[in-house]
Length: 245
Image (cartoon, rainbow, N blue to C red; front, side, top):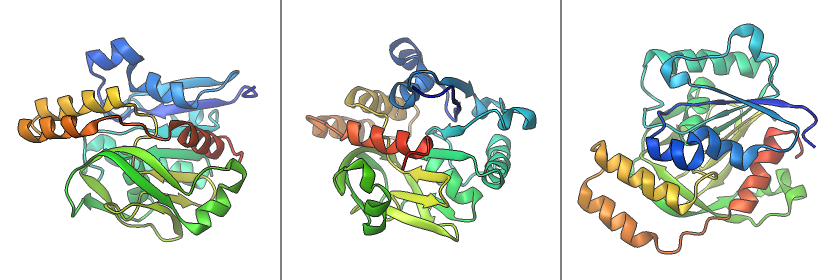
């Protein structure tokens, strides 16, 4: 049982019709991975200016920040507002899990540096290596020290915030995961994704002219049997968010 806990997804992207119809939007995808019986899950479309008010914040046990096609290093009004909210959540020691853009914006809010990845786009299945300190952190979960994860990003955390701890890296991305205190954690990849979602995102990025059609076709041809370690990631994310580590 979830014990009546309450969580919120801070949605940083617009849902496509396909996502809404097939998965109930990104909110549905994230809740599908993270929600347990007895919990309440709400969504705030922060990219559209919809934020929890100050009185509401204390009602939540934790927050999840989604991916986005926006840049975490930009100064759009909603991004600046999200940074202010994150600083408030940090001061209240609220649990916050950031995914992809969410990972980058947590880092920025806490004083780290984000920007374009030197190695360019990282799209596909990546082997993520947990650091020795994180294997101690996650020892109760009994998960492997190398996990397959779907990635889709062109930005990255370039410098960790002061006092943040690196807990995973990959050949292409130096900061795959970090933890800050025991209440904030960022994951650069997409533990919530399956192959279908990645294919849809590649098409979406191509339609928005983020990716050339030839590159998108090449990526899709190379995906083959994409099988991320979804169960291990689910265990890791839910255990962190719900204070079970």
